[in-house]
Amino acid sequence: MNTMTPWHLTGWEFAALAFAALLVGFSKTAVSGANTISLAVFAAVLPARASTGVLLPVLIAGDVLAVLTYRRHAHWPTLWRLFPAVAAGVVAGTVFLMWADDAVVRTSIGAILLFMAGVTLWRRRREDGGTADEPDAVTTRTGRMKARSYGVLGGFTTMVANAGGPVMSLYLLSAGFRKLGFLGTSAFFFLIVNVAKVPFSAGLGLIDGRSLLLDAALVVFVVPGALFGKWAVNRINQRLFEQLVIAATIVGGVQLVLR
Image 1 (tube, one colour):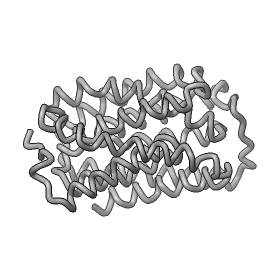
Image 2 (image 1 turned 180 degrees about the vertical axis):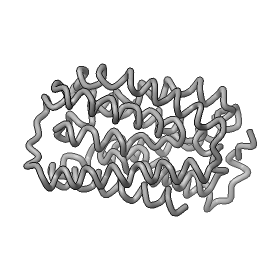
Image 3 (image 1 turned 90 degrees about the vertical axis):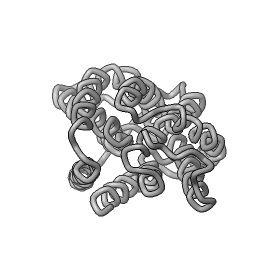
């Protein structure tokens, strides 16, 4: 894979990637889904396909920090319900990457994100949107079907472009999670899923020694982003938190469609 190393980048290019890595840390501990902006930055600076391999270890570093921060708030029944569908989505995404070019991948994922954001906004207009730290929406038959649908889409989008964050954010909001339950559940979800993706990405040639060298230089910037996110999340009320998550999803979807 023709992945750039740190010394092949200009100062401005490395600064852009460093900012994107900082934003990954912030998104993992504050506003999940905001890292779609990081995805766009990585794809703008690096070759589009290669960028997904470089970004994955950076995301895993953010996941580890998020798990350390919110591990007590994870809702495991939701996670166990999602994993089988996500596994199917990851396999589908791997097959898709074998033949789809960058333009098809970006447009498809962007369209999915915008559609799902629209559905979420429509649903929230119709419902009062009562939320709780221990959601029961996932225990109903409709909830199980929703988990499977979002799980497949989440696995597919996270495999092909590391863009599963907005999909799962919309699912967790629709299932009735409040901030801490949301962040704890998503932290474990993405740590497990992203680590599981590493063999697939390496097999596709998206991760190699040079990409890991660049990751080593970028992971340093994830830590301050995560610390800032931990500080900021306690100052964001629930309604603003949900609005920011949905807004980040829409921005990410538009970027993918137009890029």
